[in-house]
Image (tube, rainbow, N blue to C red; front, side, top):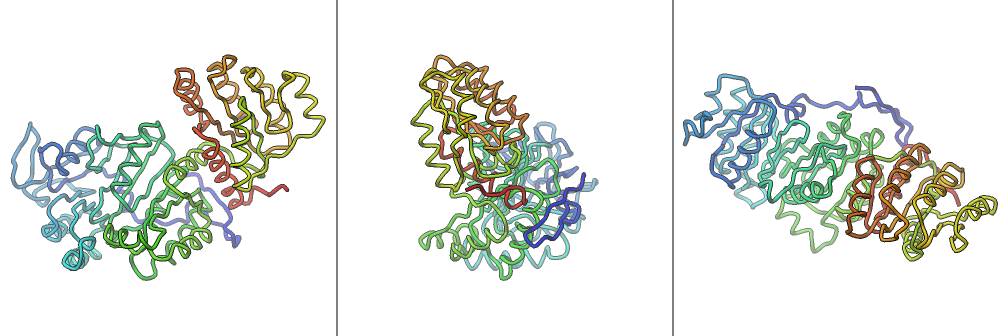
Amino acid sequence: MEEQKAQTQEGKVVSEASLTISSPLDLLFNPRSVAIIGATPRENSVGGVITKNLLTKFKGKVYLVNPKYDEVNGVKYYKSILDIQDSIDLAVIVVPAPAVPKVADECARKGVKVTIIISGGFSEVGEEGAKLEEELRRVVQGRIRVLGPNCIGVYNAFNGLDTFFLPEDRMGRPRPGPVALISQSGAVAGAILDWAARRNIGVGLAVNYGNKLDINEPELLEYFARDNRVKVIVMYMEGLKYPGEGKKLLEVMKEVSSVKPIVVYKAGRTKAASGAVKSHTAALAGNYEIYHAMLRQANVIEADNLTDAFDMAKALATQPLPRGNRVLVITDSGGMGIQSVDALDMRGLQVPELSESLQEILRKQLPPLAVTRNPIDLTGSATDAMYKFVLDTVLPTSYVDMALIIALMQIPGLTANLGNYIIEAKRFNKPIVVVSFGGNEYVAKFEGHLEENGIPVYHAPHRAAKALWALYEYSKIKGVAKEWW
């Protein structure tokens, strides 16, 4: 992998090569062979969905373990993982919680390096479950790495590894792409992937760690920092669980964020939500202000909700970093232009008025009613050529650092070809985001064409503004940007 270097706030140089990971995490995401303990032909059961996922999609070898079966539909079942002659990289455990310690011990004796424990019924359910989790810890410690328990595991769109036990008609699987997801909640992870798949957002890797008996957020962050297919890491977190965990997470976040952007949505912000967090994954939500301060110190981008997190991730994964906070706004709707200025201003981004000489150039080519100050309003008379002229004239100048383009395709002068002009403007190496709103065939073709060519599209000005803000924030973290007042 080509080494990438960046500066932290303290000026320390960090490279991708310096971010250490353990080989079991390589096997967690890229195993050559997987054994499913608790495999079953029963459709729509947890074990049944995982069995089907791996048999139909995974590119490596799959071994099924369940003492109830000898063979089903020509596929051999083993009584125990110890009966398998071949070596196993990854074991997926889907058995009742009381049986998990014994099964985990057998995996360690087999020489398996890492296991995903899907089974629930541990510390998240109370005192008895916590005792069982401690027993499991004693069994696995120093012998085998564990993701979970009480998790849905790993989704890898690149190699077909998929332990998410939600049927495909209920949870769409995203295409391979530059976003990696780390989620403390399994159900939230499933909902995010379904949402992303329906919107053609590429999520190449996703992981839910559940009770994090062993493998935790810092290790996962370090792993994704090394994977050159990952451009942005999105985290959904509820709370920390163990003493000293926050300090380690802060250190790793700061190191990883110097290599690639991390976008975090921290749930459980209110006192009312704290109890729900503890009953969910046995974590402590804690005081949100402490988390907020930690995330700021770690140089991560904090989102207010999951939609914002992925809006930001789309831009961070596809756009160059801006050198300042000045935004060119082009619109065919005065109302949408005003909304954009409000949204940008609330995020500390500037919409600077253009020089009189530059406005004069624009006035010579645009209709008399067009507004040339910035936001540039092409009005209902807008055409594809007008957008192209403004982009080619203003975007390469030193007056602006990025562009927010509003194109309401209901206007008759606009065609799908406008997308080509916007894509061509990538040559100026400045961030571009587009606001589009509507549901007709022109809108769908326009949006699809832009997204396929690396231009993020948003359905409201405030969402586009937050995406540009995230780019600017990360640009400051990387030492690229400065503020213009």
